[in-house]
Length: 414
Ligand code: LLP
Image: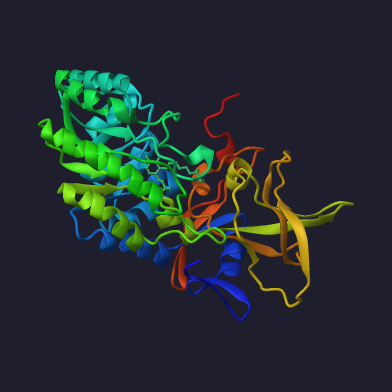
């Protein structure tokens, strides 16, 4: 994990000891390395520098205002899927012209807000959605910029829940209907067709599925140009995986080298929507062991983070590497489950993990928690969400305070 390393047996993020953060802000808490976020964004930016590009960070992976602002200052746009994410993007300073709006269920209210905010484009996923955007734009006396998200029907080799480019999924317009659908856009009064879009899934660890999808999209793009469409951009989506355990995903450069020969010759602006590959390995979750519990059949480290703080293991069976923040002196190993305090047997962070012996009070670091961890957190079981911290060398700042008990009941009435 970039920028997380031991010095004298103590785990640091950049030049900051993680124990110091946990001590001051409490656990569980999320920590992000500024260096790692910036370097990952910059590596995309330079890998795609041969083409005119717009790199729209997928806010769903990590939506803290400070993180968005950091990336926006380096030129990032935002890939959003809700009015809440639009609000965040604008608050963080992302200009409307760098915002792409994806998602299958944009409501009238959301569409109106995005039109008011003059976003770059809506990635539209169905004919009913085209109808609705046209209607709302008409009522507002505006023209809505749209591109069609095409479902290329390719296998991405990732988890079923994060596969989005197979025809059985709810996403996009089926490839075979795409040309007709583009032609139908001529009948709308309040739409301007600007581009083409696809997204085939998340945590994809080889370039093959991307290339297969983009070859189909490039073919369609050329048919559309022959048909008289003037397309300004091609949005290749996000989805590049990261290493959680022993995966060896392509780097941004390898990704660009594989996909630019297919998409570059289209001669249009290339949009990408990376999320996890920018934020995932920039962040960790710190959690403290509450109890070490042994039963006849198992050992458990009961920690103070639960599935409400990091749901990926419970939801996808995901692996997250875990290490002690203070490296134990003893070489003794133990096989255990790392579990949270929540009243569900699915509340686990690691299962049958062999690691150095764990004791109550130990501080543990759960790696690769920069993406889809804080953004998927909830208050389940009456649990306030932990703080978020951004580290910059030996400086660090709380970029979201830990929630209080009052936060838990905000808006409720007796
Ligand atoms: N663009 C669109 C339209 C998406 O749906 C997604 C992710 C992305 C971009 C960013 O994908 P990334 O580069 O982060 O892979 N909660 C799951 C991941 C769900 C991803 C959904 N869409 C997880 O924790 O693995």
